[in-house]
Image (cartoon, rainbow, N blue to C red; front, top):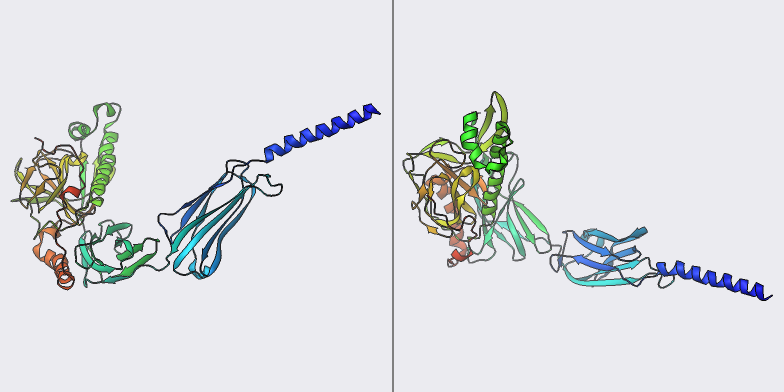
Length: 468
């Protein structure tokens, strides 16, 4: 009898131990963590993410809702049939479906894991975040009237954007050109210099885009006419001597040892060119000069002749084979060897140094995203941050970089996008397309006092720009 009782005790003990062994792994005390990833306290039609993690048994369910004065609206409810350690929920409000309106609200996120600490339910956590629902996009009113733009050329639009606007500008295809407020006394009045890039299809229609803190977008069209421009095409024959004497010198010596001449040429003409253009674009996009530094038409290098045009499509042929296609994004200006290079207009030097295929290069910021580039120089006589005046000598022409013969490569850019330089040499074009619009807005809204922005200028390049 005692033996039978002892046997049953062993069985009961074994069951208890087995139960403990089974239950303990099912129980953990770590609650899920929740992170609501909002850029601001405003919530609108712009999507946002919620990150949910569980370090224990994994997530079981998550529920997200929006609570406002009118009640609670479920945004998402998700059950996990198998354990999930983490998940990112993509939330996008549908104001019409949810019936929500502008005003204060609260985002509520509830998460439960698969722990059995409470027998049939796991660890639960609820996170609240107060927000302001804003589903009304900014208001935009176009003030300037006529906008005639050349393919590859420049334009200016003046417009009003309501005070809730945090970002606005002109969009042309995939390109965005920011607008600037603060020039006029009315803080809602903005102006945006923009380009119609040479490589954008003529069917694209420029629009003004305004965005508020909640991500609501307003897109507004304006009167616009595009004049088509036919750019030249040319063929350039590449020789072995040119690659050996000119191209190879633009790359580190140890990197060209095992390259054949064709590969070496493409490394410079394609890869280095793209890198240099990207850097020019970055400098232009980072301009913070929020004043017009230039005056009158831009100066063409004295006594110079245009030898190569803007947006020329160049086909490169090596040993009878077409190996590359590139665009020439400026004018080549020639006078005599080591001719003094003059600044095209007043501005601030934001780059001075070596720029790959452009050799010794100076970039001058003229304000509101407008800049000029001077390449292939033999010497540079200005430094980063220098204020320069129109026709001031900034260096001398040369044949540094990927230049054939002594000349100046001259480029004009709007927010880092190359544009047709000849427009800015034309006083009548500037008066009709730029100055007239600014003067009309000045007369109606007034102008703020100019602020010296020299200390805020974005600079990039070598420590000292002067070279010889």
